[in-house]
Length: 153
Image 1 (cartoon, rainbow, N blue to C red):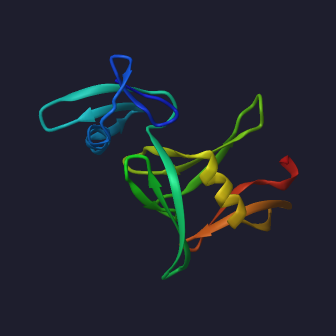
Image 2: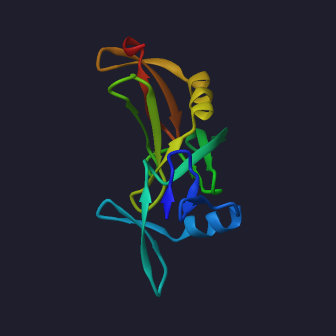
């Protein structure tokens, strides 16, 4: 089995077409020592993951107890609220400089934030100085996350 960067699950080289099956598999997915497994009480099967196993396809901003909250939903219906427990990080491709934003999910795993969702975050972002540089930042549950330095643009 394999999970592609776009969140498509494959079995025997063929995409798994049943969303309910993919959702079930995603619920028993674990990461141990950097390797991914489908783990049940009776078996543990390795799975190849191209980048990260989850793709977050929507974000909703709402008002929470600690101020604004960003609620992300994955292609497999996992829901996480960005904050201390589920931080956001952005890496940049060495060749292209393109950003790849990620959010923590569970058991040490992360999900890629889809490009259109990242653009929504940029629209919600404010400018703020961090370590002497201007950054685009978003805030969720009282935690501030940089989407990138404006000097890198």
